[in-house]
Length: 163
Length: 382
Image (cartoon, rainbow over all chains, first blue to last red; front, side, top):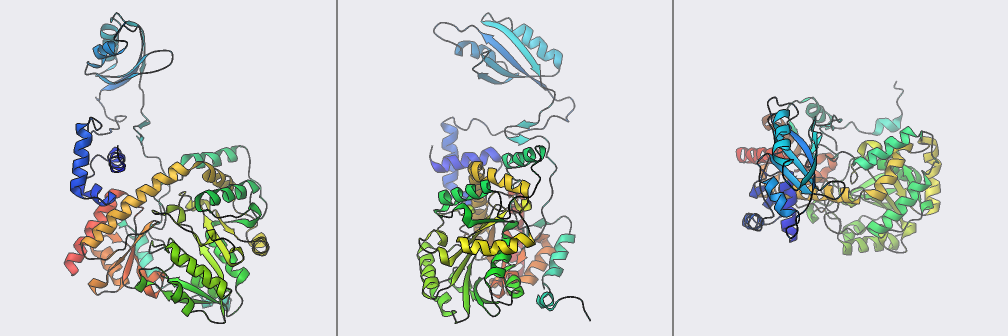
């Protein structure tokens, strides 16, 4: 990646709603360069999606989430990837990582309520032959997502005018 | 009869006070009049202070400041700016403001002249006056806000004691190119003058920055000032410092030990952490200021308000000469009609008339709205 692509990514990570014009002014490059670079980043699969960070702590009837740890017996030849595909293909698996440590897969699973998630874990995940064990952690509260605090900490406000 | 001293009575009342009060009492405005960063102090620095509170590091430090901090600053200046001061050549002060006051009180005799390129930050003139010195302004508005060595030299008289430089500059954002820096150093040596250089924004330089204090064999001519307020987002912590040869430091310490005793202890520990472990954070903040400065500069130039891209710091200095109104009346109208606050340029000296200062350390969405409102203002009043 070149410097401009890097700087565009950093800006879009902070705010995906920056217009090409805003980015062009901030990086001192033309708007068409910004457009081309963003298109390139999308085509190369580096930008996967423009999305929104939501504070769901205070939203009633919002899907709940759990972290699910899975111990896996990998398969000869395909390792973890083939098993992963059987898991991440479910829509309610919103994130899926292969990690080091005591277990192998770490998932973020979404469901309408606790029962919904429990059912998914017992019925869909635990029954996969290569899944040796599961541990489920329901998320009670989210403090920070993708570098963004869910609740703005109180801080002193700046003087509105000062030389 | 008044109890007030003649000295304090000599400081003129600020003509801008009424406007400032108006801004401070206004609700629902977007303020580009702010004079500090919009980032909180990086957490590792705050955490260090919390740790020190818990452990009870709440006593005085030595007058000159924690040895650990002076050592860290010595190392930092060498790394960042190739400036060589040993820890015994550094005095920690309560912000750079105290350092400026100490320098003037230690070096100015009555009627000494200090050449002061303007526009400049507002504290220098009154503090020089308090020492019965004379500020000799140099209008830099015709040279893109960069003081030229030849223009400085033209102001040198037998009473000239010092040249005061504050670059990257508040309010203009400009810095002096290295070639001109060398020439200014030569003038100081030639006429045996002191150079007082306040480089509080140097760490927020968008381009490489050459400090006059990095020129070898100049130590007897240089008083170097810097601090943590701007680059490390530590305005409220009040930690600045002054670097000079040991004789000068000891002289300033004679005043500092009685007037301040020492800079705030907890803040000094926090500053050690700032020196040692904050370069990534500072880099992120600098990049963010650069992006916003570019944005604002472009938005102003697009609508015919000439703005030179700053080379560092938190401000853009924009010309309103095309609008044929004074800085103050522009600022008042903009506040009343468009609910946007800026600082009128004349606050920073006569040569700032016809300009306004905008703090780009403002949330981007607000900065964008403010820039668009200024554009609308121009369209309406053109």
